[in-house]
Length: 403
Image (cartoon, rainbow, N blue to C red; front, top):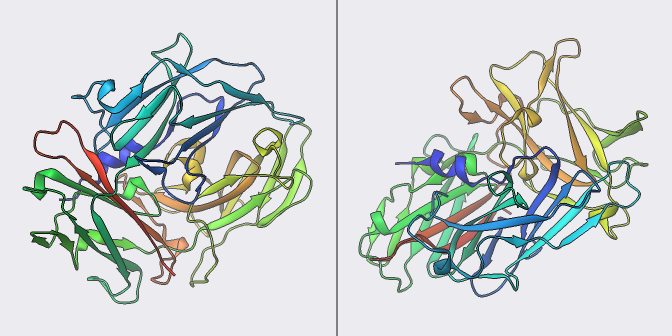
């Protein structure tokens, strides 16, 4: 049984305050991958902007979560943290310098001298303004892993639906490596994703083979993914000169505007290296870019002969898997195109278009095309609960990059 919706709705970073922009949650400065660090070492960096030069005293709370991102209700904070789980403040704040959009940049590194992690698993950080503990400003999610099990993934275009067509199929093997597993159905949970997308995560899919030393998934229909197409990408490095993928820039008297090249329906596969939805904030100087980079209104446009049944959204790590109006495109009959304007900080962005159909299901739209050659990444997370344990630990994490 695939319990996809449980993880999909709960994990994503969330921004509750419209003043907060450019949330980044990065493990070990690796912005291309999931925010996962080892229980033994590594660091999580959390960065965001508050669109004002007025300093806010922010506090944060850290909670341990189960495999499905529900809060671990049977744990005390002392079970999973050294130090304090709530009331800690973010002390690293800097005002923007010579920017049209005023903001204050906040930075937090975990673990730190106020709190360190005792156990592996899923973690959620919730941010509050001081003395407003009932009103969250944002939620940031990350994972702490202890590599106890072995994970092997392979991808093929020869799927149980069709060969060399629109799909890719994953085979998966989990080796216990000495971990005591008496009942894998209750003790182990698996999460498999394509391109770090939680909305389409395949959760606790039943294995085809259960062996004494592990589990195996072969020719599993739940591990067939739509291949999709290469992600679109563009880069804004300054407010003066267009960079990669940007046709023109302008200043309207109030804001800077960037116009990426108009996207068109893609009938054929054409390889174009991208970051599968990842983004990184930087500028042409790349010195103090956290505080010297401005914001621009980015005008996305997608040519489409007629409106598609359902709603079309921009999607990438920078949309936080949020299918909200902020990333929804509107169809313009006069230009036969979908349009959206999103304020973004200078940097590199990759993105795709996704369609929410009339049933609420998120799918790849027909105009994007789907080709077995597409270079996707796949991620597997393995959670374990020993007999007598009160929570799920993250005992395995692996990623597969297609060459």
